[in-house]
Length: 147
Ligand code: SF4
Ligand code: SF4
Image 1 (cartoon, rainbow, N blue to C red):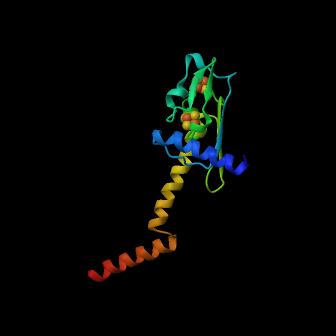
Image 2: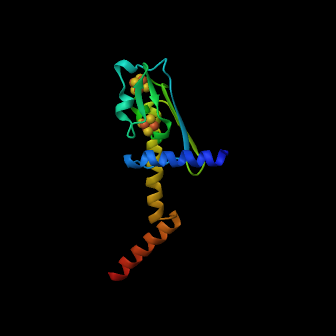
Image 3: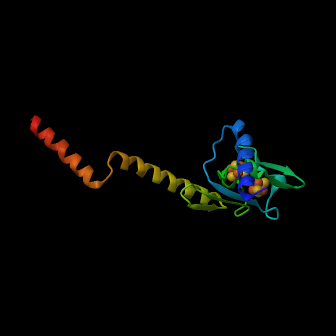
């Protein structure tokens, strides 16, 4: 099987597995690693409970990952009690790469993404400061004329 067709087959397999979960894939590609030496698995397993796609399971005394089910959302990292135990790397459609392995990394990253979205929404209304000023000037002139 060529590299292209095996990639296609992987994509199709992921699509079929993820469809029933209703979770959308937001990232082009990614990877996840769990360090079995630092994991507190027996007392913890928070990551398993947090995973929205059931990509994690406990077997043979360790956390295992079904890579085809992982959408690299970071919920497991956010809920892990051990820093750097789970490492996630993901690539966006625009080619940018995000890596995180601590809850605070995930929080920081989502704050950054939310700030970017907020700024995008503001820019959609007032694309530039000049346009904002023009609009404000127009409004005040209109108000002046009605008096
Ligand atoms: S990154 Fe998200 S989908 Fe992947 S194992 Fe962790 S919680 Fe599950
Ligand atoms: S949340 Fe972290 S420490 Fe707990 S079982 Fe999962 S990987 Fe191990």
